[in-house]
Amino acid sequence: MATLAMQSLGCEVAALNTVHFSNHTGYGQFKGTKSSAQEITTLYDGLRQSYLTDFDVLLTGYAPSATAVEAVGAIAMDLKKRASKRPGSFFWVLDPVMGDQGRIYVNEDVVPAYKSLVSHADLILPNQFETELLSGIKITSLQNLADAVTVIHRTYNVPHVIVTSVQLPAPLSSSASSVISFSTADSSSVSQDARQNNTLAVFGSTMRSDRSARLFKLEVPRLDCFFSGTGDMFGALMVGRLREAVFQDAPALRETASWISPDNISATELPLAKATEKVLASMHLVLEKTMIARNEELARYQSEDDNPDSEFAQLSDEERKVAVEKRARLRTSKAAEVRLVRNVDLLKHPVVKFRAKEWNQ
Image (cartoon, rainbow, N blue to C red; front, top):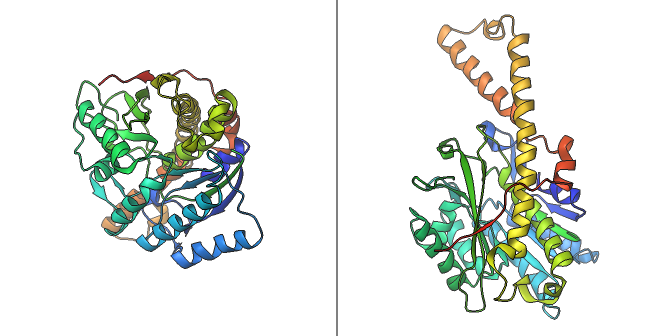
């Protein structure tokens, strides 16, 4: 998901996979292995020995253990050191994959491992729960969310933050050149429980020189479907679009550490906001196409099943019921696979309909 999305925007990608699974975890079952810290390090060493580490962006996502997180961090530190004499020549996008919906789904020691790395990243992409873990603030309102983003800027000195999968009580609820990318797990899918209102919201900020937040929000219509891999798509498209927004529209930032805009640039004019508009435009269009294809595929399954229980005729009634329900769930998961390849033009040429708005606390 992430590799293709970045390649579609002209990025040359070296992908180091942190898992090797038969399918994404949204199916509820899979076969495969998780990469060890040593395997991750060895692959990077292979790139380095052949002078293949002239990357200007690093995108990192799911890491299966604390030692794997540390291995990813060591790679980031090496790339940052190599670029230290040329401000703006290297940018790290970190998705701190730890959990969602109030639940940590990685080993407990992964959380402090990420907290020790966040301060070295240029842009982080936490969901609401991960924002709470990093800031120590329970997010129940817009003010809580603003406070949490401000704490992250000031505590970790992270220049850019985008909070995804935001769900708040009514009335507002809703939830590049050379790139090295780590594949991520199915961590940022649209949650079944998140579908409470008709919009989904993303909140972002680029800090000022005093580490205060410049906040913007962007809302898009909710699509009533469960998708897997949307977090990976978001991060990957953000790599290409943010780099584009800086290099084409704000070229002076190319030689500015972490691509931080001057304090007089408003929230909605930030490269981060402009990039987010294009990213969400592409995602919404691709997911609309996916919903159409999903419905057609599910309808085809129904029309082809003349005797839907025949496959499990040898089972008892109770076993047959369980098997039929499982097959239906797996078919639904397959039908909802994001149609990225066949809609790659929508990644390249999105029609922006949803604009960022300044978020006044």
